[in-house]
Length: 263
Image 1 (cartoon, rainbow, N blue to C red):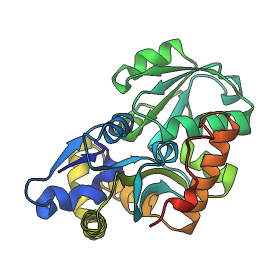
Image 2 (tube, rainbow, N blue to C red; image 1 turned 180 degrees about the horizontal axis):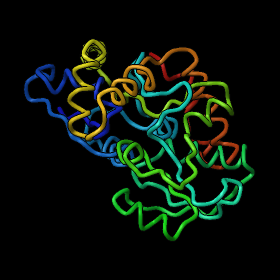
Image 3 (cartoon, rainbow, N blue to C red; image 1 turned 90 degrees about the vertical axis):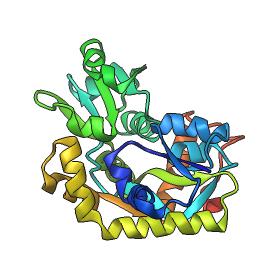
């Protein structure tokens, strides 16, 4: 069996145990950005993945692993729009091709908060600097957003903006798959619990990998990112769904209602 995995700091507590002996024999992890994982799930190349919440809303065939998400209740620090001009003056935005949830939350925030309706372009994260030279703003997610130089730029934190707009956490990803078995659900939930017990160890390893201070990584994993899918997170997903429909970002005939997210 193949499980998808995000190549970002924020997913480490969910998969650390799987990477260190917790994965059953003949199972493997496949690493890819959110947009690619969503395509791999749809084509059944992988059995499950921590996939974009937007992809889950758009695909009613996906089962959700109860109790697990990647969210922030305020600033997220890793889903950021960098702008060379005032936010209200943004006319062109280069979007990280890795992003689905962040992209659509940004579109909602710009429209509803700033009355901004820019032209959206797409760029791979490795071309971020070049893209910002020819666009007013740039959306990046994950490690690339955390590491991008911010001097001289206006920074819009999508988690912070979502909390201001809705009063709710921003839910960026959910463990999802097709026909999730009880065994797999147990494995994923146990891995999350074991990862949370090892936050300090994970933060030390990731600080070395990313060349960031240990304290930055620990604060991000222990205080900024949240991994429990509760009632407020489910409500936020429903609000996300409604706003996507209002902005024409989801098809009303195919998207799911969030009351069927839990088993």
